[in-house]
Amino acid sequence: MIREVEKNGIIIKYELVRKRVKNINMRIKPDLTVSVSASPRVPLKYIDDFVLKKSDFILDAIDGYKSKEKLKPLYTAEEFSELIVRYYNEVYNSFREYNIPYPKLKIKKMSSRWGSCNYVKGIIALSVNLIYCTEEQIYYVIVHEFSHFLVHNHSREFYDIVSKFCPDYKRIRREMNQMVIK
Image (cartoon, rainbow, N blue to C red; front, side, top):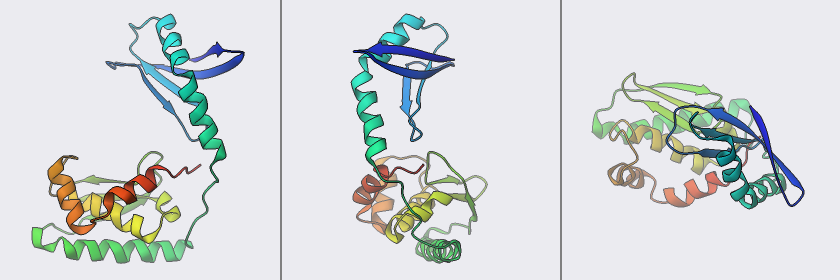
């Protein structure tokens, strides 16, 4: 359901999704749409007031997305494939001491993450959007996903493993969080 609120003559449209959630959640997407999810029990007036309270943040975020350049791929498709396979095998060899079976690699379109790990099925999926990332960033994502075979969450223990193979992971992750891919 599309809703609108107005603040100082500026209309903010947002998509309201009703679902079983504890809190009101809001996301500004790279395509500049605002999405809000809330429990069916929350009154519309309360949700509208929530969006109004967040209006400065929403408008700043939209301006931020507009001001950022659209990224261009850093590699050809062939270079990208070769790079992924090379780093994937390199990281796997680094993790050999942990006796991890060689996981199946999938490259697929992902809209909100760089990679995922299904440690039960032995699959690592990497986003095609990594084509916009530096080699250092690609390496970090692969290390991150391999680390999930050892620790299945994002605890301190998990990041201790990541930092063993990628000591500068915090800076790399911060840089990647700033990227806008449309």
